Image (tube, rainbow, N blue to C red):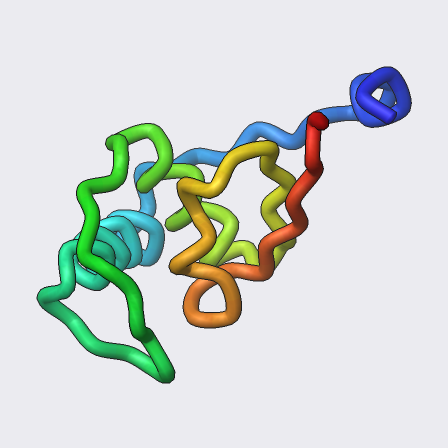
Length: 88
């Protein structure tokens, strides 16, 4: 599956837009429990800065996020559409 993904062209996105920067701050506040939205019920957490940029970007672009970890689970159906791959 990974080889299939890597054969496609990748799109480079400039994150220096007001929309993405504002969404970064919003998702950071949401993740830390400082902002409520929808049916959120999770323990507040600090996300890594790179994960915040990824989440903000896919949220604005309205594209699904494909991941192998649980770092984005609390954002699923609130800010992003999450597709997880189980490596087990």
